[in-house]
Length: 155
Image (cartoon, rainbow, N blue to C red; front, side, top):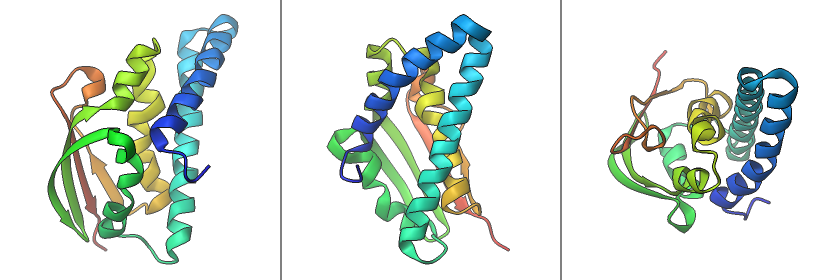
């Protein structure tokens, strides 16, 4: 499973979660369905962050994060304009997101933020809770680019 590109993993997850969304919507309403999907994806992202941090054997900084970023960009899943890569600061813009494109094609564009975008900050909770993500816009919501701004909080 580790060798499977994240884009493909997200496609498989979305195929299943689409049905979960439909079932929960039928039973409990759309708001509850989205809340459940959001919580499940959040937990998954935190768990993934913890697993990748454990592989390092030390508290990851943003240089470590930059080193694993190709996991998310594999197979041209993301086109990036990297602005800064330092141990305590990493900034880049995503100018093309195949995750967003894929969710739109699957008819899941309206919950794409739950399936992918919201995971970005949650991943940090597991990877290193001192890493903070600020993002003011996403391609998923119709912006021209996603503005990722990570910083490592100082003690």
